[in-house]
Each structure stands twice: as C-alpha cells, then as structure tokens.
Amino acid sequence: MKLARAIHFDESDRNIFHIAARTGEWAISGGFEFSDWSEADLKGKNRQAFSNGWLGMETFGRVTFVAVTQIEPAELEVLTDRLAQHFVDIYGAPSLDAARPVAARELEHAQDLCEDHDPNTLIAVSRELTEAGVNEQFRTIKTDDAGLDQFAIHADME
Image 1 (tube, rainbow, N blue to C red):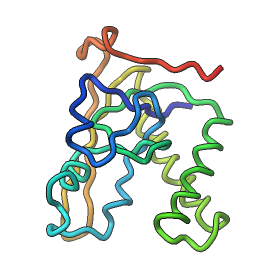
Image 2: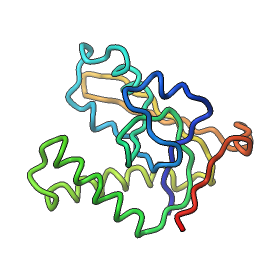
Image 3: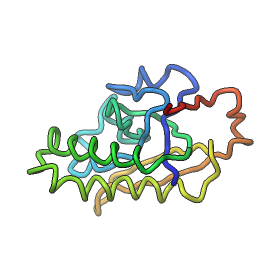
Image 4: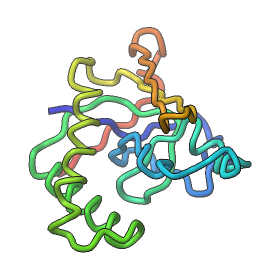
C-alpha cells in the first residue's frame, strides 16, 4: 500500500499557508475542506491552501508537494481514526462511528492516487471552483526529473 508524505524543498509553505504541514507527515488532498467555499472565501492564505495545498494528517496544516511512499496497515488505521476525530471536532460529524467510513474513503482516494507511482514520485494538486463544486487535478513529477535524492526525507516508524 502507498500513501503520500509531506515534503518541503524550502521554507515557503510556512509563509503561504496559515499552518504548514510538518515534513514527513502523512498527507491527503483534503479537498473536502473547501466543499462549501465560494470565490469570496478565496483570499490570501485561504486562496493558497485551496489552490494547491495538501492536508497533513498530524498538524492538519497544508503542504505544496507530497512524495509517494509505502504505508503499513496499522499506520493507515491510526490515520483513519485521526481523520474521523477531525471530522467530529471540526466539521461536526455526529460520532466517530459515523465519521470513520467517510475518513476511510478519503484515505482510499489518497491511496488510489499513489498506488501506480514509484516511491518518491512527487504529486502536486491544483483546484478550481466550478459550478459543480471543487475540481481537483493532480500532476506527478518523477524522482529522476526532480533530483529528489538531494532533498527527500524518509521517516522510519521504528
């Protein structure tokens, strides 16, 4: 199984997002945050988060780039519980039992985005508001093209 981790090439995310995700934390697109936004909401740092921010799963901060890496089933379970709790705390989900299947689907979507890519492949997201809602598009950058060996930070869970 694969999922994405936040990666930084410089300090710019600290300046462009309200909260920057921590390097190495698991990340998902997090487009659900913008489901009820309008053009009026797209100002300053909110616009930047909407336009190209991935959602970190520890800080719930944003990051511009993520890198594909392996994830263990136990880690995925922890992330599912954490996201379900976030849905209860921030979005008013009625219970963890109700939020957990939605959180699992969000993480499945993120896994699907990563599954066919080699480890360390970078992924960027871009979003736009349409009449139908939020449209997300994803762009990949292969490690060889990015020169990632100089920058990648890999966490060891042990």
